[in-house]
Image 1: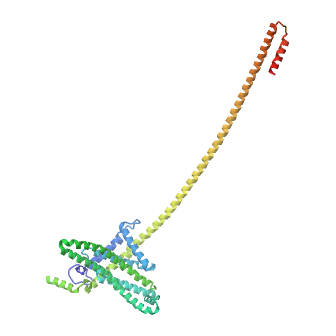
Image 2: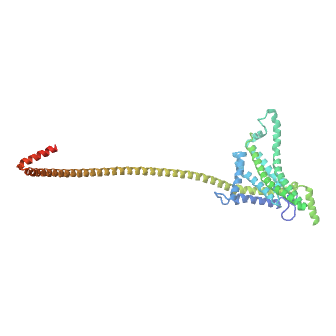
Length: 236
Length: 179
């Protein structure tokens, strides 16, 4: 579990809110990686894109289309926010896979803040756009009348569980993968010549973790789009 | 020093999962907000407008290129049509010239043939005339010879005959022979 400990970069003092820690370092690297992909590669503004620019354009088009398809055309104004979330999570996950790296997204504090930000934004937006009409999201008018209060209760509960599942899914996936990799690596150290087996296992696991890193970023983003759709169009 | 490290380790152990060490939460949240704001500013100010502009420009360029290709294709078609028209015109002109030449040659040939016919006719007439002349002179010669012969024959027989009656008799004989 050492790999998840937040430590100050300089000295060994207590961790204050402003202390530069390994969190600071790896988040800064995440920012640089995002800037590297989306700004450095596109500096040529080429009509015929380079490989890097192509990747930047693909990720742009991917998220843009996701926002448009899932949350609707009028959700496009939230595209920069959703793109910010996606790029941050993607690169935090990927950078976390570098050996000795610190995975910022494996911390519930980080994912919870993002999930709560999404939750609060979406909820406020729903009430601002639709007023009390937003509450109709919980009142399933297509269900039989006697069933509706029960369904409304379930809907309300599931609505408030959203940020919890939203944040724990990401942090959990990241933490579990890294912890398992660490355990296998520990076996390798203990087995001597037989270490081949855990090394192969860690290699396979690493490939899986690469997949998970991208998929979790995708899942977090698409759920954000789904919640956004509820706020913009609460009538089912 | 050793004990201090041990204490620190012990403190960490006692917390259990580092994720639930609430003392680090303010730090993480602060730096997270800094990172997210930084990324948001970079994306919304620089990256997204730039990529959006590039994509729009490319779409525009492709549309333009397609339009230009359409135009060039149309021009090429027009050029081909003009070429075909020129070709047809040239063929028509050529066949017209050929026809005209044929007619001219036919005319010249006819004239030459007429001339040749006329000359042949003239020459034939001339030949005929000369043949007639020759025939006439031959006939005259025959009469002369016949007369002389007759006179000699008459004189040899001892009869006396004047030249006039002998001539008349010969002429009558010749005419009768001819008849």
